[in-house]
Structure formats: structure tokens, C-alpha cells
Image (cartoon, rainbow, N blue to C red):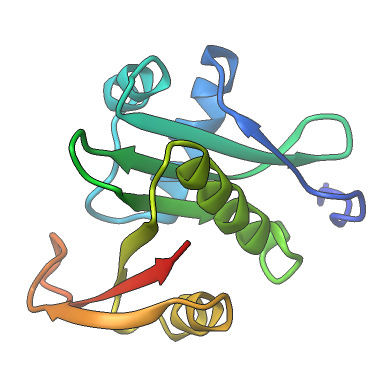
Length: 156
């Protein structure tokens, strides 16, 4: 049975321990390498230097996640990871997560948000650039499978 289409407004909130199973399942379904483990997610849920966000709709239906890292002594936050369920793609879930990550970073006093994205992920690159991110560098063989990365930044 296929899940119903995403029709309700996307809601983004801070993740809770009760989201752990959904977070890990989406991580494993989305990424072949460089995955966050259950233990890492658990640690980040209670961390002062990380914020895990989840997107939902239709009475808490889990649609996606974003992980933002903060470092002491800098006003630059890092969007470490973002993932959406396949049925939620192209429906504003990624944009909502990115906007929420930007808002969270602003609230923490950050002046910019940086991220890395696979150089071959044209869909994600277009989304980031449409949302105001600009290319600031590249990393050769950045990912575990040897793929190159682009480094992007948005001034908040």
C-alpha cells in the first residue's frame, strides 16, 4: 500500500528520542556511505553543538530530517546532513528543512550556514542555489565512495 501524497503543510521541529527509529531508517535508506549511526543520532539529540530537525505533515508523519552543527567561537553553522523520504521529494520538504536550519542558526547567533554536497547531485545543488547558497570551494574525493563535493555557503 502506497502512502498518501504529502498534502498538509510541512511542519519542522526539533527531533526527539521518539524519532530515533525514523531517523536511522531514513539515513540507511538515503545514504550508501557516510551515514550517521543510531548512537551518533542519539548523541546529537542532546548535544549543545548539534541540532537535529525533523519535518512532518498529516499528524506527525515523518518526512525528512536535517542536522546542523555549531562550533564554539565561530558564527558559521554547518548543515551536515539533509534527507527526505522519496514520496516527499519535490513537495517543499527539503526547502522547509533548509529554512528551519537557517532559522536555527540565526537564533544561535550564526551569520552564515555552510554545507557540502556531492558534485554529482544536481537536484540538491539547484535547490541550494535557488535558496541563495553560493559556491565557495570544492573537495576532491570527499565522500567515502570517492565522490567529489562542492562547498556552499549562505550569508544569513
